[in-house]
Image 1: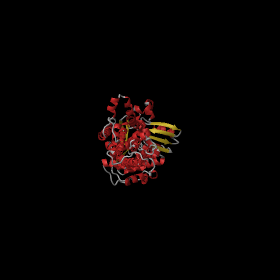
Image 2: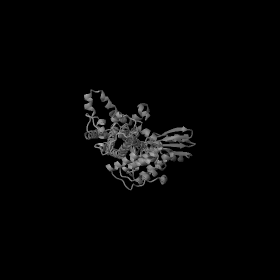
Image 3: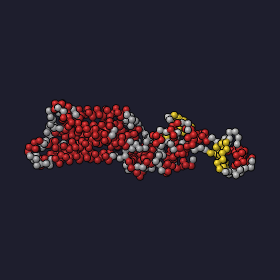
Length: 271
Length: 232
């Protein structure tokens, strides 16, 4: 046939292979760094973590009484409370962005078993957020302490018991927040719904518990994901809070639980 | 490729293909090859969300061909393509088949299918209605219709009419004969010394053949379509 003369031939692939977990991890890494939303969210997380402590430590005009109420470590890690929102939003987006655009169908066509995609997303996003948030919490600590010392305010040394754990704990907390949000995103499969669910669990339910009788509130609040997780980067612990290790492990348990629910729904539901 | 719009709108075509390639350990060079093959080189680094329907189709095809598959399944591949794109798609599909691959295409575009498909499977209401080669499908549906143009068309009509033969005058000097072959009609005309200006066996278009075949099938009667099906 004469029309066949103009046909482009499909070059033969030199190499085709099977799907492995490691290959899916590499694919997810490509996906993560090739989106603008990732870069902006992570940049926001880094900047917020550093900016707030640096800003707060400049308030040198506080009275001695006020100073006594403010712990230098709380100032150093104030940014973590803000940047957790950026990390959580990105955690939700990592998975819901695929549902909203239809990319998820391509992802699951390439990896029909589906679960390797969830594990790879969790691993890649977890490692990236830990590696990226560790320097900012350290910078935030040392920068804020340097500024506080200029104002002759109370400072705290990195070698003080519990300080190193709290500062590094700030980055670990952010990693777990991101993973928790990713799990919620995978369950809800909708960006707005995922972010709203995360905000409800972290920012709405805790103050609501304050209207419960105090004894109930004291008994329940410490087991909330946000309260348990917070202990990882808190130096001091109230009578009704968990210690850092049990708190951190409980938060890790919540992350595992959301991922488990996400895994079940991922394999059962249609895309 | 079942749906072209399975692409993250914020990611470039190149990174989209690379992410899919990585799941199977397919190297970058293969991604480059396919970007050239589907003609997306100039926009490979642009965000896929800005792509036209046709560019989206090309990206979907590239994704489907990454793994050098021996069977390719495409759903409405020419949807949204411009004439040049349709021609390209047609030659690509034929090329894939010529290389010994099996190419499945689902489509409602009958004229396009009659140009590309070697074999047809017609499905209506979830049941297989036909499974045959395109040429057989067409000849079975045409039913021996021959158009004849002749100054002596009226005389010819009188001679041809017989049991099982139906002659219909379309206009003065132009008739449509059912039930005889062109050879038989030509012989009759020659034996009687009639001049023939046209003697054309009519082949039904794939669309007509398809309509004939599915006429019995309630789903395809427009009057009885459910509103939502009529929309689709």
